[in-house]
Image (spheres, rainbow, N blue to C red):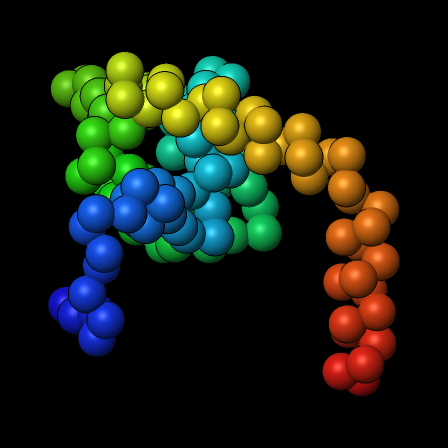
Length: 121
């Protein structure tokens, strides 16, 4: 297992939030689950740029922090669903604000990203 070289500053609220939301697809997963996309296959389709392995790892981390819960239906074929916990629900206003900020600044950010890739070419 990977061990961090720099200890997490446990007294910093931003560090705590970043620990939960830090991950390329975690905010997208939480947003999708909040919109009713609950099944693993649906989540994979909703975020096609990611791999199933990475999504599964990030789902497991979110579950570990009790932001989401995994419900396993014992039936054939097996069925799994993810749902936000009460703690997860408290993150949604923050994620919605982040989404709004990104939408409002989309063209500015997009230009910077496109210019950055031109410099690298």
